[in-house]
Length: 529
Image 1 (cartoon, rainbow, N blue to C red):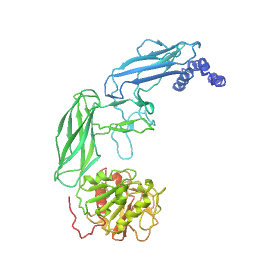
Image 2: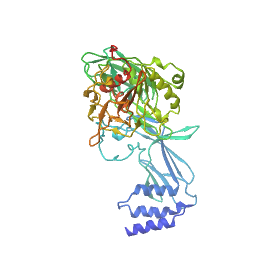
Image 3: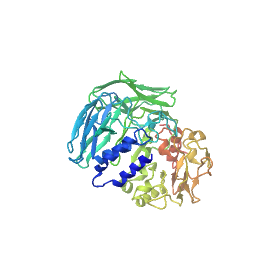
Image 4: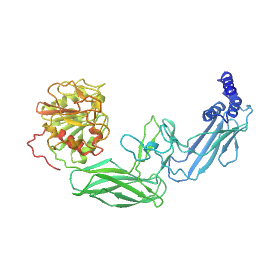
């Protein structure tokens, strides 16, 4: 090892910033003398290629391939060593004849992979079904890696004066954006056909048939298969099977299902299954695209929860003010509410009195610069008899100092255990009794936390409704506060309804409906729409 360290020291001392290729001979010597030693040769190989100015790229002709598709690849290689530098440089591709790389001459090689992969592109921790709070995966090759290993173009080597250097390159897709330049993105290996439901849960409050839509996408030419729809006990779906025939790669079609819960309907999963004749797939399609990161493609399980609720209602028209983003409007529409998104013009100039309740989206008071003007309108709406339900806001920075009609502060308190016991501090309060009787069972089956950013330092006019705590922590009572203001009701809640309603949690729906109904007289007869 002393000999190796001496050689490394010599390489470091003699390195020339303006002529890095002068280090190549010594780096090749280091590669040879460490061949049988525990040494990170991948980094050494990349260092040699960098000093030699050798560039290698593997480009696929299309961005997405179906499992087992043939993949056409273009390899490009360029040596930028000085023309008079005494080195023979060659590109060696698996099962191919070495190709000389003269200085400054771009070489292109077309080759084919017989099969894209047997493994669908998917983050390794999401490839298998998993329970709450943990992931399941096999093998250790990806352990602690941010994502799965990319598709490989096959073995590629560069030979410099007879010493072979392994070139590790991911297969990528490249295209030109006139405004940005060249864009690279990972190659995706997809199921031949995916079926994607629009919601994670579908909630029914009666036995009336309802139509839901989903999309089917093909990832190979002439993608054909039979789609089967499976529903839990007590649910009927029509049609139960659909023949799929998609002509072009990337072709997409929309379909509708009619779902009917019977009196025997049990909660469970609606599942979509595609049989292509060669294999059966259970995948949807989701793509996450932002300018600052590579495109992320997921193929989640093609399923959604079906839930039939016993909900009573008081009130029908809901106004919703978008915050940082949640799915509350879609969830409320599923159970029969009429939801209107309130933009600045409607808030400032519209008649808010027509709404039985107004809901603010999560973190609205953190992001909307117009909150001082909007807040005055909202509190006036409450004073005149309306119900305002504020979802959680981060405690700082806030666009206004006081969120409610009376003082309180938002803390960083949260209860992360979704099964934490909940104590009713005001068991007779209207929000726990009308129009739905709330019991401890309504807090069963919650997902990913109970609540966040609880209220504290409350004016005496507020009522605290619930108390809860993580194990080993002090009880926290600021998850749900209610106050009378004028003729109406003001409510702030840190309960994570924005997680629970899209997940189809029955008790969360029942409690949220009660909050929306808080300003309605308990003498009014509730309805089961």
